[in-house]
Image (cartoon, rainbow, N blue to C red; front, side):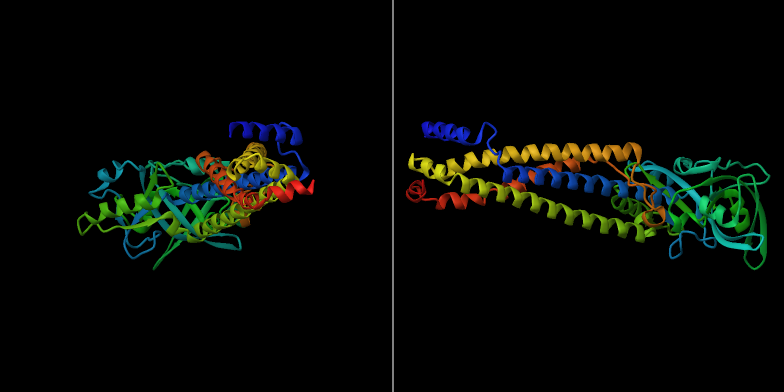
Length: 412
C-alpha cells in the first residue's frame, strides 16, 4: 500500500505540479472561497459594530438596567422612589454592577419666539458617569452639578438646539406645566450629538436638585435608579439577579426592573433583524464556496479519470485515492480562507481607522459604518467554514467509487 501511495503521488505531481490543484476551475473555486470568507468576515465585524454602537448609545442614555416605581413609566414625576433603598449596598456589591446612579425626570416645554417644543429633562447628581455624553459632546462643556444656589446649567442635543435656535451660553426659559405653570431659567453650557434622533431630540440634562424642587420632592425622592454593568452583554442575567434582590426588600420598597432592550425595543428588534440577515449571508456564502469547491474537484476528477483508473488497477483503494484528492482540495480551501481573512481584515481595519464609508445617522443611528472585531466569533467562523466545506468535499467520493479501471484505461 505504501508503494502504491508513493506511485500515486508521483503520478499526481507529474501531471498537476507540486501544488496539485492548478487548473482554471480550481483557481475559480479558490477565489470563491476567498471572496466568501471575506464577505462573511465583513458581515460579522460590521454587524457586531452596529450592535456595540447602538447598545452603547442606548445604555449611555439610561444605563443597562433601571429600577423605578411599579406600574408607571421610568420618566415619572408623580410617583417617586427612594434613592437609598435598604438593598442598595447589596446591589452595589454585585459583581456585574459597575455603578448605581439616581435620576429624576420631568416633562416640560421650551419656547423661543414662535417656536415651541415639548422636552424631557433628566436630572442627575454628582455620581453620574458623564463618559457617554462627554464622548458625544459637540460644543461647549458638560453642565456642572452642584448644590449651590444659582442658575442651574443644562445640556441640550444638537438637533434640538438647531430646531429652536439656541447656542452655548444662552439662557433658556423652561415651562413646567401642572395645575399651575412654573418657569425656571437654565444656562445652556453644552450641546451633544448622540445621533439617536428619537431620543436625543427631546432629552436635556441638568442637576437633579433643580427638578426635585420643581416636583416638590425631598432630596431622597427620585424617579428611579440607573444601573450600569461591567459587561453590557449580560443584561438579562443581571436583570434577573437584581429582580430577585428587590423581591426580598420590604413591602414599602417596591421597585420594578426594566432592562434597556425593553426600554428601546425598536432599536434591539432592528439588531435582531440584522443578526438574521448576517446568518442568511453566512449560509449563502458557505454554500457558494462549498459547492464551487465540489465543482472544481469534480472537474479535476473528470480530467484525471484515467489516472484514477490506473491507481485502482495498481490496487489502491477508493479511500486512499479520495484522500489524495481531498488533501489537495483542503490545501486550496485553507489558502483561499487565508486570503479571504486577510482581505476582510484589511478592509475592516481601513474602515475602523479612517471611517471611509459614511452613513445617514437618521436611518442608521451612526454617522459611518461601524466595525468591531470579536476574535472569538471570527475564529469560530473559520472553524465552522472549514468543517462545512470539508463535509461538502466528501461528495466526490461517490464518483471515485464508481470509476471502473477497465473502462477508464480502455479510453486511453
